[in-house]
Length: 257
Image (cartoon, rainbow, N blue to C red; front, side, top):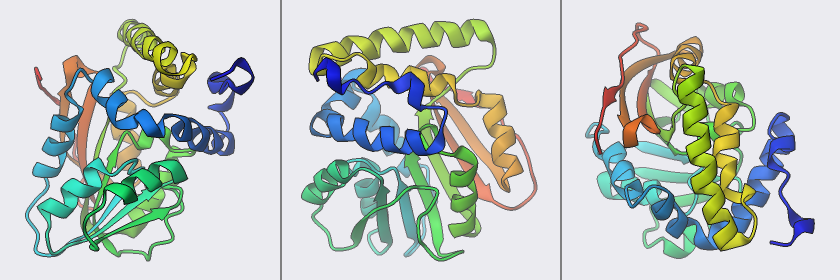
């Protein structure tokens, strides 16, 4: 990537519309290498985390499933395997990511759509399950995205998210940020000649709620916390929530994997 095409990540994360435009541009750049880089950045654990997310979902006969920020379709395809009679929609803002997802698709039961996760265009109460891999952190407006997910879910419907996790406490946040900036920046230089392509992870996480704040925000948007699991020494978290029902907060379970 030439200097004239730098992404100016830090300057564009504070404004929702600029963040959406940044996401579309950034993921368009990384799309050809996205599957490989997610394996590299996670030291090969990414596939296992996504499989565990889908495996933990309850059995249902023919659920309507929505995978937001679906990328190249990893979780979308796992949903199709988990629910062979289900209706599966993969949603993403970036055309280049959707092109790769469609190229990988081998079943007519999956529909890929281009849309922002905060403006899905789906009917209210039409979805049984929502998933998101590295999704909420990338939302242009987190509150808007959560309100939309709540709207499209049926009463009692589940949402399960996998993403980088921000610990409470400045010392841990600083340590995690330095680690992610170094690791992401290294691969940004190697693959694109621009460290900001993957230091975006650390920059976006710095502006994201920490684990405790995220729980409170989810509860304020009408979600009941079902379970939480920390992976990779707490750098990644899997969080499952249910629409409506009594509010409760469950601690994350450490996972040495």
